[in-house]
Length: 201
View (cartoon, helix red, strand yellow):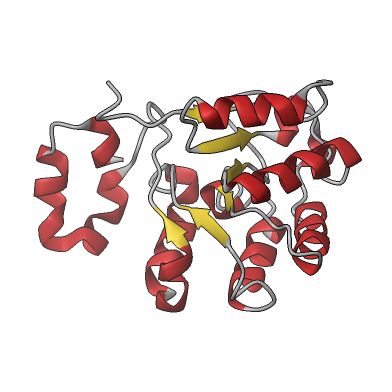
């Protein structure tokens, strides 16, 4: 259904033909490249990863990358959870004029409201500070799950960040819309009535 769905690819940067493969999926219509470093064991500062990021910048392919904890899959590589290495890599790429459009999934929020919020805080600081005029964004997918509601509420109140936030869905991750009923107000019932599950979450 190309009229309804967009093609997002995932090419591991460590494969020998990674740059060529990225060009191939882009030519085939990929609208972004997605990485989950904590599952795929991707060191963002590895020269092979940097080469793919440079390629993405050159061809105009955005990258969607996940940092902080994850609950839908097992975190196999906790050493890849911190956000600092990503910001460092983007800082260097930006200085050389080859930073790709980068979207950080879930605003780098933890799984629970009491989890490690340092990556989230670093990202918000970067979006409003050093990278305020750079192609760095965050998506708000899965922020209506119970453990992330507190961060969703803060995002709703931080109007200066709204232009840097993108809507995404992590279907079929369950939502907890009843927890944000007061935020939705008159939109609560129409949202529940929407026949499209991804649109509801």
